[in-house]
Amino acid sequence: MRSITPLLALCLALALLSGCRDIPALPEIAAVPGFELHDHRGAKVTPAELQGKVWIANFMFTSCPDVCPLLTAKMGNVRSDLRAQRPSLRFVSFSVDPETDTPEVLAKYAKEQGADHEGWFFLTGELERVKGVVVKGFKQSMEKMPLEQGKPQNIMHGSHFVLVDQKLQIRGYYTSDAPGLKALARDARRLVAGKADG
Image (cartoon, rainbow, N blue to C red; front, side, top):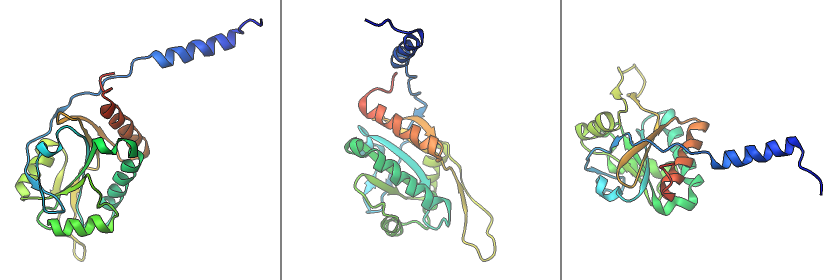
Protein backbone atom coordinates (compact mmCIF):
# COMPACT_ATOMS: atom_id res chain seq x y z
CA MET A 1 0.00 0.00 0.00
CA ARG A 2 1.43 3.35 -1.03
CA SER A 3 1.81 6.00 1.63
CA ILE A 4 0.05 9.38 1.36
CA THR A 5 2.38 12.06 0.05
CA PRO A 6 2.73 15.28 2.05
CA LEU A 7 1.03 17.24 -0.76
CA LEU A 8 -1.96 14.88 -0.84
CA ALA A 9 -2.21 14.99 2.94
CA LEU A 10 -2.27 18.79 2.85
CA CYS A 11 -4.99 18.78 0.17
CA LEU A 12 -7.13 16.39 2.22
CA ALA A 13 -6.71 18.51 5.35
CA LEU A 14 -7.71 21.69 3.50
CA ALA A 15 -10.76 19.97 2.00
CA LEU A 16 -11.88 18.83 5.44
CA LEU A 17 -11.35 22.26 6.94
CA SER A 18 -13.22 24.04 4.16
CA GLY A 19 -16.15 21.66 4.56
CA CYS A 20 -16.31 22.22 8.30
CA ARG A 21 -15.80 25.95 8.53
CA ASP A 22 -18.63 27.98 9.96
CA ILE A 23 -20.77 29.96 7.55
CA PRO A 24 -21.57 33.39 9.02
CA ALA A 25 -25.18 33.87 10.03
CA LEU A 26 -27.23 36.35 8.04
CA PRO A 27 -27.77 39.51 10.09
CA GLU A 28 -31.23 40.59 11.19
CA ILE A 29 -31.04 44.20 10.04
CA ALA A 30 -34.53 45.54 10.69
CA ALA A 31 -38.20 44.63 10.53
CA VAL A 32 -40.05 45.33 7.29
CA PRO A 33 -42.25 48.41 7.75
CA GLY A 34 -46.00 48.07 7.69
CA PHE A 35 -47.65 49.04 4.42
CA GLU A 36 -50.85 48.71 2.43
CA LEU A 37 -50.27 49.05 -1.30
CA HIS A 38 -51.76 47.65 -4.51
CA ASP A 39 -50.10 45.42 -7.05
CA HIS A 40 -50.22 45.53 -10.84
CA ARG A 41 -53.27 43.27 -10.79
CA GLY A 42 -55.15 45.72 -8.53
CA ALA A 43 -54.98 43.49 -5.44
CA LYS A 44 -54.20 44.89 -2.00
CA VAL A 45 -50.81 43.75 -0.67
CA THR A 46 -49.59 44.06 2.92
CA PRO A 47 -46.70 42.40 4.74
CA ALA A 48 -49.22 39.86 6.08
CA GLU A 49 -49.67 38.52 2.52
CA LEU A 50 -45.91 37.99 2.28
CA GLN A 51 -45.24 36.61 5.75
CA GLY A 52 -44.09 33.00 5.75
CA LYS A 53 -42.26 33.42 2.44
CA VAL A 54 -38.74 34.57 1.69
CA TRP A 55 -38.89 37.60 -0.58
CA ILE A 56 -36.64 39.76 -2.65
CA ALA A 57 -37.44 43.45 -3.11
CA ASN A 58 -36.19 46.03 -5.57
CA PHE A 59 -37.11 49.57 -6.61
CA MET A 60 -38.05 50.89 -10.05
CA PHE A 61 -40.38 53.10 -12.09
CA THR A 62 -41.90 52.43 -15.48
CA SER A 63 -40.75 55.58 -17.32
CA CYS A 64 -37.12 55.04 -16.29
CA PRO A 65 -35.22 54.88 -19.60
CA ASP A 66 -32.15 52.92 -18.58
CA VAL A 67 -31.46 51.28 -15.22
CA CYS A 68 -34.98 50.10 -14.27
CA PRO A 69 -35.49 47.73 -17.20
CA LEU A 70 -32.04 46.32 -16.39
CA LEU A 71 -32.96 45.88 -12.72
CA THR A 72 -36.21 44.17 -13.70
CA ALA A 73 -34.31 41.86 -16.05
CA LYS A 74 -31.82 41.06 -13.28
CA MET A 75 -34.68 40.29 -10.89
CA GLY A 76 -36.00 37.94 -13.57
CA ASN A 77 -32.59 36.26 -13.80
CA VAL A 78 -32.50 35.74 -10.03
CA ARG A 79 -36.02 34.30 -10.22
CA SER A 80 -34.82 31.85 -12.90
CA ASP A 81 -31.76 30.90 -10.83
CA LEU A 82 -34.05 30.13 -7.89
CA ARG A 83 -36.43 27.95 -9.88
CA ALA A 84 -36.31 25.11 -7.34
CA GLN A 85 -37.07 27.46 -4.43
CA ARG A 86 -39.80 29.45 -6.22
CA PRO A 87 -42.77 28.03 -4.27
CA SER A 88 -41.21 29.48 -1.09
CA LEU A 89 -40.26 32.83 -2.65
CA ARG A 90 -41.91 36.11 -3.56
CA PHE A 91 -40.52 38.94 -5.67
CA VAL A 92 -41.59 42.52 -4.89
CA SER A 93 -40.87 45.57 -7.06
CA PHE A 94 -41.79 48.92 -5.48
CA SER A 95 -42.51 51.79 -7.87
CA VAL A 96 -40.78 54.99 -6.78
CA ASP A 97 -43.11 56.97 -9.08
CA PRO A 98 -46.49 55.88 -7.74
CA GLU A 99 -48.28 58.98 -9.02
CA THR A 100 -47.59 57.82 -12.58
CA ASP A 101 -47.37 54.09 -12.02
CA THR A 102 -50.98 53.07 -11.49
CA PRO A 103 -51.78 49.33 -11.36
CA GLU A 104 -52.71 49.50 -15.05
CA VAL A 105 -49.39 51.14 -16.00
CA LEU A 106 -47.47 48.60 -13.92
CA ALA A 107 -49.40 45.72 -15.51
CA LYS A 108 -48.41 46.94 -18.98
CA TYR A 109 -44.77 47.32 -17.87
CA ALA A 110 -44.67 43.85 -16.28
CA LYS A 111 -46.04 42.30 -19.47
CA GLU A 112 -43.61 44.21 -21.71
CA GLN A 113 -40.68 43.19 -19.49
CA GLY A 114 -41.72 39.52 -19.38
CA ALA A 115 -42.19 39.86 -15.62
CA ASP A 116 -45.92 39.19 -15.18
CA HIS A 117 -45.41 36.00 -13.19
CA GLU A 118 -47.21 34.47 -10.24
CA GLY A 119 -45.47 35.46 -7.04
CA TRP A 120 -44.02 38.68 -8.50
CA PHE A 121 -45.71 41.89 -7.32
CA PHE A 122 -45.23 45.39 -8.75
CA LEU A 123 -46.49 47.70 -5.99
CA THR A 124 -47.87 51.23 -6.01
CA GLY A 125 -50.00 53.45 -3.80
CA GLU A 126 -50.25 56.92 -2.35
CA LEU A 127 -46.96 58.80 -2.68
CA GLU A 128 -46.39 59.35 1.05
CA ARG A 129 -47.17 55.72 1.85
CA VAL A 130 -44.73 54.48 -0.76
CA LYS A 131 -42.07 56.97 0.35
CA GLY A 132 -42.49 55.83 3.95
CA VAL A 133 -41.88 52.22 2.96
CA VAL A 134 -38.98 52.87 0.59
CA VAL A 135 -37.11 55.62 2.46
CA LYS A 136 -37.95 55.08 6.12
CA GLY A 137 -38.45 51.34 5.98
CA PHE A 138 -35.97 49.99 3.44
CA LYS A 139 -33.53 52.94 3.78
CA GLN A 140 -33.42 53.50 0.02
CA SER A 141 -33.31 56.82 -1.78
CA MET A 142 -36.39 58.11 -3.61
CA GLU A 143 -36.19 61.67 -4.90
CA LYS A 144 -37.44 63.44 -8.01
CA MET A 145 -34.61 65.11 -9.88
CA PRO A 146 -34.90 68.59 -11.49
CA LEU A 147 -36.65 68.43 -14.85
CA GLU A 148 -34.43 68.76 -17.91
CA GLN A 149 -35.95 70.20 -21.07
CA GLY A 150 -36.99 67.51 -23.52
CA LYS A 151 -36.35 64.69 -21.07
CA PRO A 152 -38.78 62.67 -18.95
CA GLN A 153 -38.90 63.10 -15.18
CA ASN A 154 -36.02 61.23 -13.58
CA ILE A 155 -36.19 59.82 -10.06
CA MET A 156 -33.13 58.95 -8.02
CA HIS A 157 -33.66 55.63 -6.24
CA GLY A 158 -31.77 52.75 -4.72
CA SER A 159 -30.47 50.03 -7.01
CA HIS A 160 -29.84 47.43 -4.29
CA PHE A 161 -31.87 44.26 -3.94
CA VAL A 162 -33.19 43.52 -0.45
CA LEU A 163 -33.62 40.05 1.04
CA VAL A 164 -36.44 39.53 3.55
CA ASP A 165 -37.07 36.40 5.59
CA GLN A 166 -40.25 34.53 6.49
CA LYS A 167 -40.66 36.60 9.67
CA LEU A 168 -40.50 39.91 7.77
CA GLN A 169 -36.95 40.70 8.86
CA ILE A 170 -34.56 42.37 6.41
CA ARG A 171 -31.55 40.05 6.17
CA GLY A 172 -29.37 41.68 3.52
CA TYR A 173 -28.76 44.35 0.88
CA TYR A 174 -27.13 43.26 -2.38
CA THR A 175 -25.57 45.17 -5.24
CA SER A 176 -27.02 44.57 -8.68
CA ASP A 177 -23.74 43.42 -10.21
CA ALA A 178 -22.90 39.75 -10.84
CA PRO A 179 -21.22 39.08 -7.44
CA GLY A 180 -24.07 40.78 -5.58
CA LEU A 181 -26.74 38.79 -7.38
CA LYS A 182 -24.85 35.55 -6.85
CA ALA A 183 -24.69 36.27 -3.11
CA LEU A 184 -28.40 37.16 -3.12
CA ALA A 185 -29.38 33.84 -4.70
CA ARG A 186 -27.12 31.93 -2.30
CA ASP A 187 -28.58 33.63 0.77
CA ALA A 188 -32.15 33.25 -0.47
CA ARG A 189 -31.53 29.50 -0.75
CA ARG A 190 -30.16 29.50 2.81
CA LEU A 191 -33.27 31.22 4.13
CA VAL A 192 -35.61 28.84 2.30
CA ALA A 193 -33.64 25.89 3.66
CA GLY A 194 -33.66 27.31 7.20
CA LYS A 195 -29.85 27.60 7.25
CA ALA A 196 -29.45 31.36 7.66
CA ASP A 197 -27.95 31.10 11.14
CA GLY A 198 -24.69 29.51 10.04
